[in-house]
Length: 435
Ligand code: ATP
Ligand code: MG
Image (cartoon, rainbow, N blue to C red; front, side):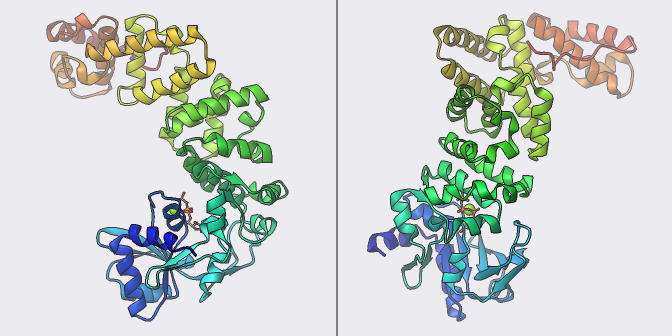
């Protein structure tokens, strides 16, 4: 322990956490802050979640604090609400037996802090800080690994990876999110444990991918995943890429915005014609509908700079993408342009970007809100009540206005709406058509 290390922790500790630990101590329990928050502060980063480990049992924690949520009672985790913040308070645990490689068979409470730290995944995540005594507990020399910037499993990596198949992916993820290197022994233990990794639920995999995507250079995680064989399990599409193609994907991945959909799209950019496979892959990995649709949307517009050559096509593009998403979509296209690295790609993109800006600046109508008439107007001129036709007529009007914005005046739209509403089955909008 160096005095400097506790200094940064003492300074960063929120009042709520200090109070929480002090209260537990007044009641005769011990309390430490542990895990990611300790690691992040020692690295000079801002801590996100402050997690507390305590000798108090979950039912004691519930009695001591007025406002609690039994978040993970089986695992001994109680969320405590204090001073407007939430803290996870977990009873010290020892664990034994992982028959399925997914969760421990038995969780035993009443362990020591050293035991608790010994069941954590990596040394840098296995450091505890006791605010009352102002001391660091670091039995696995996590501080040394922080200094060396190394991800190393606590104890024997082969055993630890066999206990919980997710840890191999977490190793890769921390290589990206912390910008560390993977210890050679720890890396060597990944391949023998791939069968256990393959059993991990897609939800847990997705969670780690998401955290990798938030890193400055997610490629650091994906390179580890590729060279250890992890990628083949959850992303055969990418794993199948040849070396040069994978390299371009990695450069695109780091250059694109941190938006998860942009990161995913960058990975499969050159496979984008395989829409069905990409869709199935994202479903299997439990990406949300919104995320999946966003990935497919940006891939569908990958060639827009070369195809949306006039203003009407550009307006159609903006209608399909939406003004709130156009920023990251453009930035994702720009990442690919930088990977292509040719003057031609650059100038084509610049001209495209200028067209998009001019459409936005001109406030050209690109969505229903911008139409000079509303659904109520359509019903009035149609002399009919509500129905599907209202939306269909409006979509059709928008199509026409997108072709020629000068048509967006109330009088001519009303006349047109009347005609369209009278024909039984008006054609629906072409919003999904690519430029
Ligand atoms: P981040 O800041 O990115 O969330 P983190 O270290 O806080 O990183 P969490 O997933 O929030 O990661 O987990 C909190 C702590 O719980 C970790 O620091 C580690 O000590 C422990 N931990 C989490 N998952 C595992 C696991 N699968 N096996 C062992 N220990 C784990
Ligand atoms: Mg965390």
